[in-house]
Each structure stands twice: as C-alpha cells, then as structure tokens.
Image 1 (cartoon, helix red, strand yellow):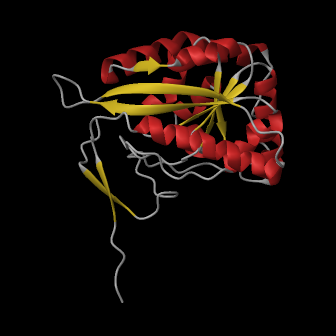
Image 2 (tube, one colour; image 1 turned 180 degrees about the vertical axis):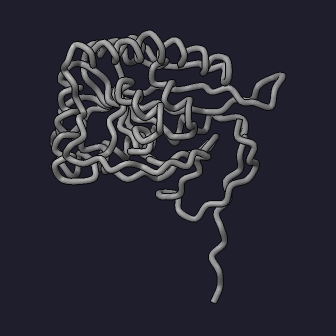
Length: 261
C-alpha cells in the first residue's frame, strides 16, 4: 500500500507517480504483437485463464474489497469487439480490474513499453494481453493491425487514456482525444469504467467501487476528427460525474506553485 499522503504535481497530462522505476525497451518493427503458434496460444490460455484471472479476483477482492456497478451494460456485447476506457490509479489493480468487469471476455490492454520490459514479468505480460505502444513507423503499423485484429475477433481492447498512474487519485485528469480514434476507425462502441474509492468501516484502506457506463457510439454525422473529440468529451464527462462517488481521499494531490520572477 502506497504510504504517501501528499503528492505535488506540475503537469496533469504528463506527470507519473508510479513507484516502479523501469527502463523501457524499444518497441520497433521486430516486435511481434500477434502469435499464431499452438505453443503461444497455449501460453496465452495458461497465463490468462489459469493464472491471471483467479489471481485478479483474489487480489482485488482481498486488497480492495472490489465491487462493480453497471457491468450488465456489457452483456449485449459479449463476443463482440469494443473498447473500454478507464481511469489509471493503481499499479497492479488496474491490470486486474478489467478482468473483473467483463469476464469471461478476453481483454487486450494498450500499455506503456515498461510493461513488457521487466526482467521476468515482462516476458509474461504479452501472454496476458499487453499491447505496448510502438516506437517507430513499422511497429506502429503492426500495432494498429493487432488492435484491429483483436476487435475483429470479438475481444476487448482496454485503454487508460490518462496514460500515467496517479495512485488513489479521485478525480479524472483532462486526457487528450488521441486514443479515441480507435473506435471511430473500427466503427464499434466504447464503454468506460471509473474506479472510485470508498471509505472502509474498520480500516484505513479504501474499497474500490468500479462504475461501468456505455455504450458510447461515434457520431457518424461528424468528420472523423470531430467524432474522436466528441466521443472523448462524452466519455470524459461521464467519468467526471462518476468520480464524484468517491468518499475518501487516500492521497492528496496538490499543484506546485509557479515560481515568481
């Protein structure tokens, strides 16, 4: 559990407060996003279904007494591809909570290259569905093909549009509309989930209650660029409203004062 009480920030879009310090490896054109061999399909099944899913349930239930509200909104879209956007406030739990939201759907998560660069775990995270952001043009083409393939296969692609982890943050940071071109291009719905922190009766540790909202469909009467912005604005407004449900502040975030002179 993060022991920090106050964190000072300067940039809501780019400041990172994860305690993990990892040097990311380059994600270039040699990186394989999709594997079709029988062995790789087995390792995906083993790590995702037999290890990560039960571990996710135990972790979020024991540590955070996790509860999901509104997951029935996803039911009509089981076995269909869609995008799932969430606020980024935990190192470990954020990797697990999507599994709790839409199980038994398979999730593929767009992640920072840090997540595939760890000495041991970094070898496993691709089997868990990690799709690291690319570093060059060839890798970007392969990345987009992987995202399109997973949606076409009827899976979920999870995105944390805030990009950086702010532990236990109870607001929603003003994320850009960059990642909202995916559902616009694919012509599929998007959902959002908002993790809120609730006071626990006999402990200082908060509970996490996750609210699921959607579907949000791109407005096809607009240009692609306008669709992207309009979709982002609707989801952002929804998440901001849901974030008001938090009842406890575990870590206080304060903006640093600008120096004078």
